[in-house]
Length: 153
Image (cartoon, rainbow, N blue to C red; front, side, top):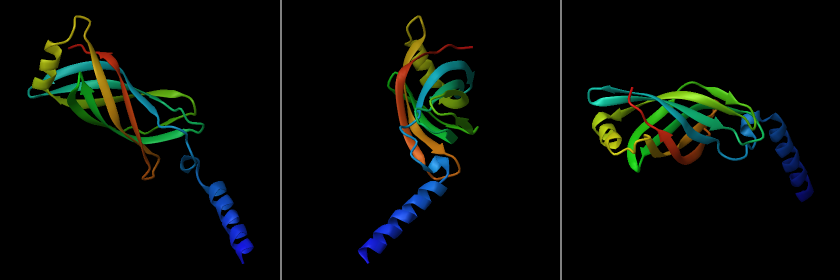
């Protein structure tokens, strides 16, 4: 009886793995999400709109079908914004893609931050959130820190 159960378990596991779509198989590590650039900052009364370009690198061995990114953004240690990318993108294994996003920021917070920027406009950032994979409920967390230039246009 034990041999029968073990054989059945092995067969079921093999069938599930063979029939599972690529996104359900191991994809390696989380995508690397960083801010490539702040493309524009537009003050609109009490809020400011930041147009960002995110770099998303797939470090896995399979294509990564990103449905959505949800993220929080900090500049120089201040919680600045929360954002959501809404344009699905599939990133080939070991490749990267650029994704434009807009975030809404409190104008007073942004102006206070800009007032303390060095002459080159560089600001330290931390972006963290989750990457939603395909049409599944699978969400992979990510976090990245770096520096980017802020400029009012």
